[in-house]
Image (cartoon, rainbow, N blue to C red; front, side, top):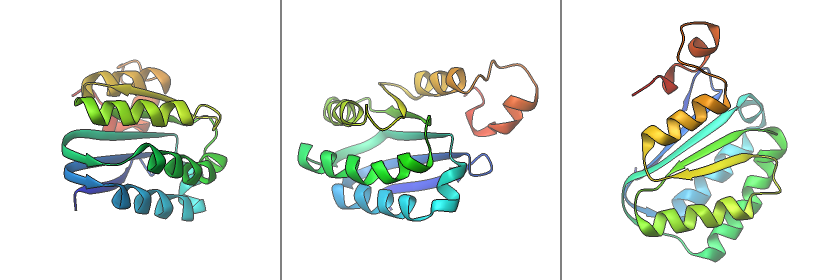
Length: 146
């Protein structure tokens, strides 16, 4: 599947990967599934969306607006969550920044990056993971330095 969702870190995190051609229908469908599981959603502290391997992102600004409205429900379960998006290519980066702008009133803290290491470093900082061994680092093993 070109757009994959994986829950990590005892379901406190979600990693999404776009590979090859990623359609708006896949992104919308994933967001609807995520928002429908209220119990799982309430555990989430962060999301990492990675378009590094996306060759063609088929999305429009109108679909981005629809996605934000779907995300609004999820945001009500996850106030203060952190979202990092990796978008090295120009179009996915532009659409991700548009999404970031539209989500400013959701109560999430979002940022868009050109590279995965920067996105992971930002998430670690937001979640107060300083790279030292300890309970906090153990809580988010998927965000260990790559």
